[in-house]
Image (cartoon, rainbow, N blue to C red; front, side, top):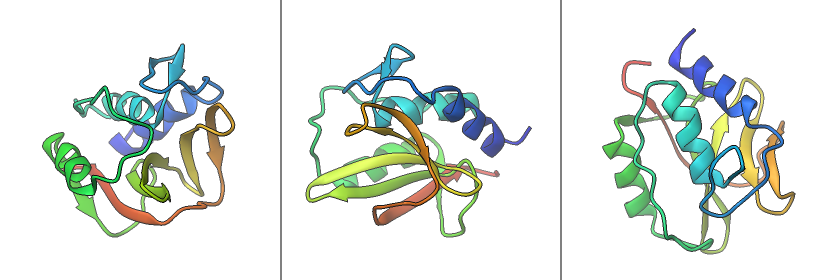
Length: 131
């Protein structure tokens, strides 16, 4: 199984887990917790920030954290990619690319869901180096 396939499988294993801000386990996840869970399955030891607000617009800080975890920016879409999205004014969001959509921790639906359509602009995409 490739790192991307492991990432998607781990994200899918969290479908239905309730949304919880700063959640880091299957008792509750936010988008950062879901990304960390999925990337760990691919062998990426992503640093997991805490203490952040639901709204943040510090793109440079987030990109630095992603790249410090050993992920590289890419332009082609592939299942398992980590996506950084603009979910609203002043709000950044992570999702995991799937074969035909994304998996993310949806604050409005209060759980981890898989969607076939992406309702937000993609600011960037990353994957483990060499994947």
